[in-house]
Length: 109
Length: 117
Image (tube, rainbow over all chains, first blue to last red; front, side, top):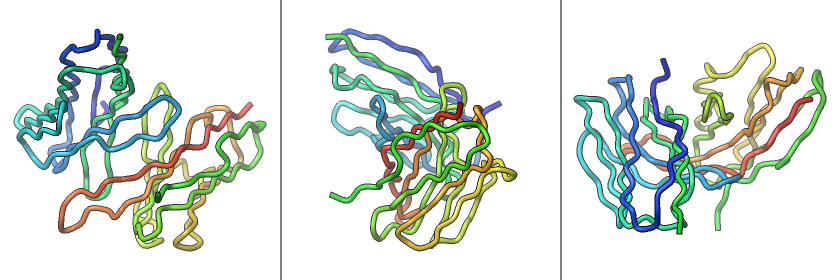
């Protein structure tokens, strides 16, 4: 079993839709949780991160962590075609980030 | 505009050949990571360094892979001999590591796309 699980998709939504991306993890020692966005043929880029349980909002994006159920979520409001990418969730163990396999998202105009 | 650079961007080689990938981390970053990305396995951590010292290479096949940081501006990943199952995109990332202020972003390079025939 991988430490971080994620539905690979692909997920296809119409422009303007609310998108929910989800991950589960098994390592109770994870302290920080992050979402990276990866455009096709590019390296991943940090979208946002949270510490422990709770919510964090940044513009149209909200990250949510529930440590009791080991669940990580990313919500995208008013999705745009420019949000089309692969989204990688991850958790830190010291310096190491353990990533999920990524969910491919397409936002259709 | 500080960026992580990687060379080569693409590499096609034959099974059994040696492959060397290079990475120049962002100036001032003390932590360097090597990842491998495939469709099947996703993004896997191979090894990472802090202040040029290897901290963890448990994700790396020891018999054929080696990673080094000859100096603060260069990290290398070598595969010898290469095998078709090594075909993947290899990413280098740099950052400041987990510090007193919490998580520090890892900045990824553009990757080296390796094909082993």
